[in-house]
Image (cartoon, rainbow, N blue to C red; front, top):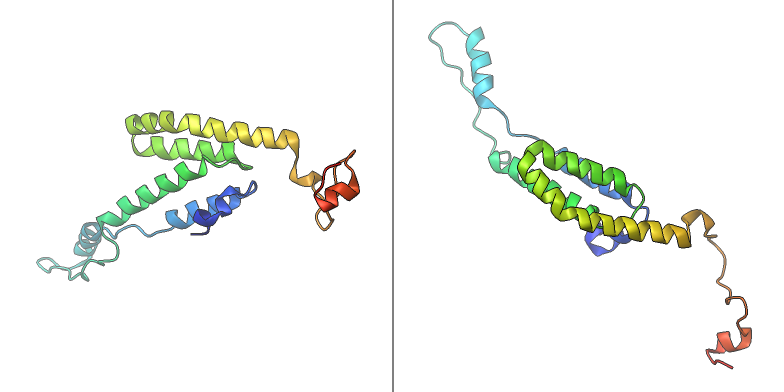
Length: 158
């Protein structure tokens, strides 16, 4: 994915991570055929058996397990990147883990908390040095103040 090849390291990439999570969440859940059969049986005459289509092999029980594992991986990778919206992404990750299993969620959140805090401290440190709004695109870089322009251009110190 693009996140594996560097897009994950951009500072304002929180929208990419959020869209990735939403994409995986949009995977369809397996069809509950037993509930459908019960519903059909209530409308059919006594003694008839509803005929249901075969189960869709693309959506079996493993789909939800794959989705859960994929979401966990996305959240865990995302909370380690210093970016705008990191705090909200961390809160979503905490809610995700605790919604599935409180005990496992507590363990995983405790495991990933130092990594999140490190990413957050890097993000805050970067913001103290510069912000995106201060950068002026479309301009050429200039030598630092007090630097000999001729020596800086030639790469020779005087």
